[in-house]
Amino acid sequence: MQLTRGRGVVPTLSLAAALVALAEPAHADDVVVLDTSHTLFYEAPTKTHMFVYSPSADVQASPWTWLDVRAGWEADVVSGASVATKAGSAYGNIHSPDVVTAASVKDLRNMGRGEVAIKGDTTSLTAGYAYGTEHDYRSNSLHVNARTDAYQHNTQFELSYARNFDQVCDRVQASAAVLPSEWTALEDSTGCFTKAAAGRTTRDIGVDTYEASWAQSWTPVFVTQLTYSAQLVDGFQSDPYRSVVLGEGIKAQEHEPNERAREAVTARFAYYFRSLKGAARLTLRGYHDTWAIDSGTAELELEKSLLESFRVMLRGRVYKQGGAVFWSDDYTGGAPPLGPKGQYWTGDRELSPFWSWLGGVRLVWRTAPTRRILGIISDIQLTGSFNVTDYSYDEYTLAGVPVSNALAYVGTVSASIGF
Amino acid sequence: MKLRPELLIFTVLSLTGCATVAPQQRAILADPTMQFDADAKHEAALHHAIENREGSMGGTGVSGGGCGCN
Image 1 (cartoon, rainbow over the protein chains, first blue to last red):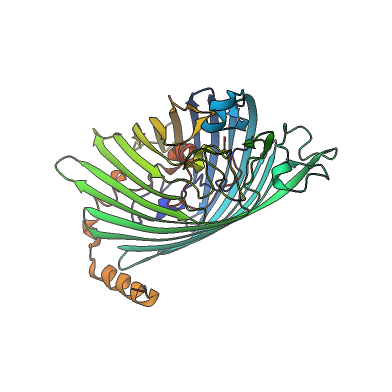
Image 2: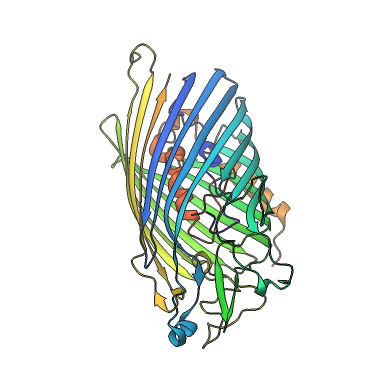
């Protein structure tokens, strides 16, 4: 089940991982590397809850030093509830309606991916493809990446581009429903992407994502990375299932603009404290888009090596954003900031003004014995992490009922084995 | 003041040329704790969950596929 479009191209593999070059990769000499991870996500804000299990598996083969071939799969198994109809405080105070529907959500997202990387001493070229399916969504994604080192490997430049050709399922509107305010939300995903798709249609979403990075080693203990990211989204970005109450007797399918241009600048700093045998990593990000959402992110990670094989990391993160220009908690009226906001309407809490914090811990154990385990395994890495995040919504309500207890818990375990 | 790209590029290249960390000094830079994304695959699911609950993007790469926006 889709809640918001345009964020569908969020990364699942960070291409920036290679930016701090000369760092010896954990599996530098391995011919084959297997990775698997398993993540549980749970949140239970007011009147809704969501549970997601996300497994993944990847394999990388390096038949020659100049070639990496990768293939992978990941999934999201989703169950919970979502807000099917959005109304705000002004409407709710008068009508006390049962417009907040804890609609049942069950969905399965599958994604397969493949990637080829050609590597030289100072450069690498990477190209990949990913295909994702959900009951109501299809995604075809191509990406390319080029990286080069300069100045004795003290400097790295990287350029990346991705193009998504996506489709989302929607209902066929009645011929008499000409205006968006007359459109009805999709009831469920039955019939989506099937030959007998009576009453169903598909809407296209094209996404272009660009990224340019510059990483720099300034001293033997200090590195930085500066990244510019841009994304152009063109197509249906609303939640087809969600309705918004617009006035007396008027309830319409969510209606967001088709075009969205997004850009962000991210600065990252890492400093090593010799006395502590650990490092501090700071990330600062500023973001702006044409829906008038501005946001800022600050994240601090403290990581220390323990003994020969362990690393422990503590993380803190703070995020704050303003709302989209067409965001209103209640389009039926009321004192500002309530009221209609032009030709668009949304019930998406992610487009409302809010702030959040996150705290977490991660533990890594890695062994690389001099003799191969069982004669074939050259190294093993096990990683576990747990994070808690809390969202505080400035304006978003469920028919006037503030959303509280918006705590989300994310736990991940992963293993990486090199052969 | 209008930003001139050629000046920005010149400044970046000038700054980067001044930084000289010799190969024999790079041991700490190679330490996993100094990597911004040493455990990128492990962190991917967390980034996925976070970014689908925020109105923002950027800074963590471009590849991916599917929505998974729940």
